[in-house]
Length: 214
Image (cartoon, rainbow, N blue to C red; front, side):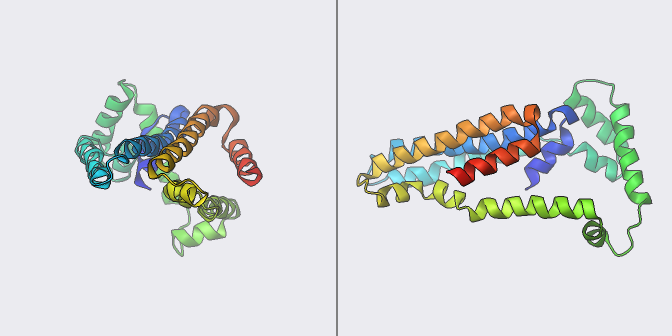
C-alpha cells in the first residue's frame, strides 16, 4: 500500500502512471523468478522446500537495507513545513536545481485543501462530494472484485490446481505454474507500455473484458 503512494509522490507527473504500473510489473516478475527457483529446487525431495522457504529471506534483507537509503517523500515534507529538506530531495531525484515551480504547485494545493470546508471531518467530505464518492466506490470496487475473481488463489495455488487437473509429478506442476507466472508478468509489462498511451480508463475496461471472456 505504501510503495505506490511513495512512487506517486516522488515521480514526475508525466511518468507517474508508468512508474506505478512498473511497480506492479516488478511484483509479477518476482513471482515468476520465485516460480523458476521453486522449480529448480523441486527435484530435491528431501530439502527442496527448505531452500524455497529460506531463500525468500535474501531479497527481504536486500530490500530492507535499500529502504534505509531512500529519501522521504518531498510532498510529505512540504506538508510538514520542512521546505528546505523537500527542496534538497527534489533536486536529487529530479537531477536539477529548477524545482521551485513544483514546490510552489504542491504548496498551492495544500493551501487549497486548508481553505476548504473540513467541517465534519475528511471522511464526511469524501462521501458528500459526488465526484469523489463515485471515484472512491469505483476504485474500491475494482480492488474488491479483482480479489473476488480468485486471481490470488490461481497464482498462489496454481501448482496445486494443476495437480488436481491430473498432473502427478510435483516438479512438472511447479514448472507449469512458472509458465502461468510468466504470462502474468508479460501482460503486466504490456500494461506498463499501454498505461500512458491509451489511458487508465480504457486499459481498465479492456482488462475487465479480457477477465470476463477468459
